[in-house]
Image (cartoon, rainbow, N blue to C red; front, side):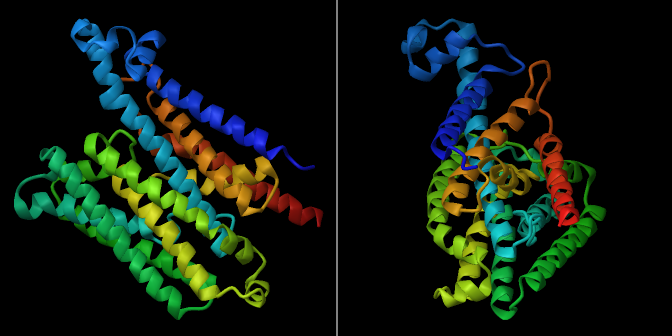
Length: 354
């Protein structure tokens, strides 16, 4: 039965708007809906900041300096990871392939580990004490580490023919990175280890100010560019033989899709830390909702569902009554793990029925 695609897309857009508003409205500090609306649109007392009370000034700072950056970061990061996951699953034709499958997230983690864990041991100053400059250094280190691994993967992809071989090499790169990180932890000071562990838990709250603007702008360029690969991904679904007969250069197509996916993962991991399960679970959710394998539908659907799901996870992490926020990866695992498990059971059931 064909699903009403346009109606479902409109419902997804409406859900994103609703969850975005809830992210601004709910939190450890209660802010009335009317005040949130005034701050967003500059109406009421917000139209003239000089007339605002001290309480309203505090609310305004919470909205603009905390909740809006978090919600925008979650929206963009969720969309990027979901699109990346769909691309990986298409290239490898593996339902359990995710954005981190090629070790790119591990490369970002290794870059951060080198900076965080060695800063106290070698320089005598823990990076966690440097505030904003420390956060910038983390982002740069993560990007360098992720792009270095991605360059290695791109080089290897030109030398090997099979997707399975490339997949195994990516997993091995992840193990090597984890081993190096373990050695660095052994020689590091306790304060730096704690800072690294906190970074590894993932957070949408880390990005603010100019960093948030740059992050959103980069993703606003990368996500539309990924849509240029829709036709290529549809051809890859047919299998290498059919795709080659239709004129597709398999090696170049695989290189383009892996590069696009890798850059998306690198940027999101650099700014938010390694966010798990969203990129793995969302493509399966979209296939179940829309009941299609056509990437002309799946790509925009995955982007929207990923954005909505990330907003939900951020909302749960900042549930009213909590001081601070729960680790995002704890929430995404609770949401994503059942989806992945259901895919495995459904696939097993289909094999038994056959």
